[in-house]
Amino acid sequence: GLKDGRSFLLAADRAARRKVPVVAVKVGRTETGARTAASHTGKLTGADTVVDAAMRQYGVIRVDGLDELQDTAALLARARPPRAEGVVVYSISGGTGAHFADLATEAGLRLPALSEAKQTELHQWIPEFLSVANPVDNGGHPVGDERGRKIIDAILADPSVGVLICPVTGPFPPLSDRLVQDLVDAAEQTDKLVCVVWGSPVGTEPAYREVLLGSSRVATFRTVGNCITAVRAYLAHHRFVSGYRSPFDEAPRSPSPSFRKAQALMRPGQQLSEHAAKQLLRAYGIRVPREQLVTSAAAAVRAAGLVGYPVVMKASGAKIAHKTELGLVKIGLTSASQVRDAYRELTDIARYEDVPLDGVLVCQMVERGVEMVVGAAHDELFGPTMTVGLGGVLVEVLRDTAVRVPPFGEEQARDMLDDLRGRALLDGVRGRPPADLDALVEVVLRVQRMALELGDEVAELDINPLMVLPRGQGAVALDALVVCR
Image (cartoon, rainbow, N blue to C red; front, side, top):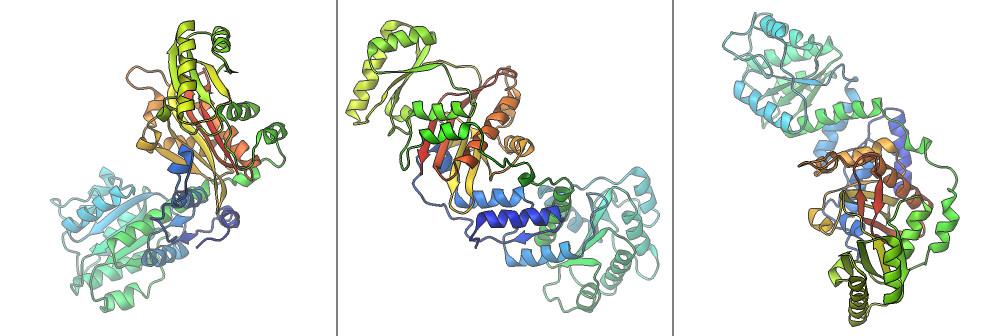
């Protein structure tokens, strides 16, 4: 397993800069990282989730088993960069070709329909009643003439095709022997990837053992699944490295002006109150509601007048993690009498639950927007990690989050949003206006800066909810939780 996550990231970064593919099997995928977490971020981020995120960020290809590892690494070691991402399936069996095409499409491979001109060309050698759009079905490979090789060459000559895959369900000489030889000969004359899936359970046939395995230009597989995994990894790797920019080049080299002020707020081994946690956010330029911390009902009424009705009132204390479950939040208060009653009720509940308070927060009420969660946590392997997702009281039910390992830039922050199942909510649905994505991304980057600078001092940090207002109006951290190391 991994011993030093940061060293792993630096090594993966060097490989990505040099366009060197890295394939890995990491055991412990079902490990839950069973630690007691106070924050939503901690509960939503398992150890394997972080490893997976780190590998994807740096283009490390993660596979499930040693057989996939061997086949994928072998393909990447021999294949030249793709000329195109289109995959064509060529088979002597229409059913086999269609089945393979279904699996490949489900795995995310792109199988473009060949042009009408290309289909007309292929029908010179393949009967008109057979489909040659993609998959290409030759209905029984021609034997004893040049038609078979011409079909393969014509497919490979198409500029939209980068990969040709031929599934062979089993040995049926001389037909399969000629098919294999044509594929090997064609592969020697092209810089495009040619793959063969040899379906025989025995694997001792000369066409497989001598012709296919003797070729350095054909990638040969024994299973459909391994072929699809390897081809997907091949295309994804070259796509990734073609646009890769090292996040370490843009990472800050010195602490921000906020660092010293933030450090003074830390309480080693303790959880900060919401009021203190929001001071930390404010130090890093993250917007919070207008609010005042009060210790009497009369002060609460005065604060409500200054903040402006309607208000939200919340108990504030260093040992309160999730206030809603305890009834320690009152929303939509519109009068002095409601504020006085809410103050008494909140302090009574806290006394009954034996929860020490540093006061009651009287907060501006912010209603219109999309509730998100933005958090940071300290991972034992990688250090600071970042999480963003759909927030609110159902955050742990929805479990719709994306994880990254800092450092990363704006593009990765936006990619995190695209990873969410509920991404469409940010674009506006059912008459709601689009959310301020720029403001959300800015909060993610500011929390990342905080996590990098205070990484040795913060165990968990949670902004939930972060209310993302309509486009151009910003984002407001309505609640925050910080657990110090």
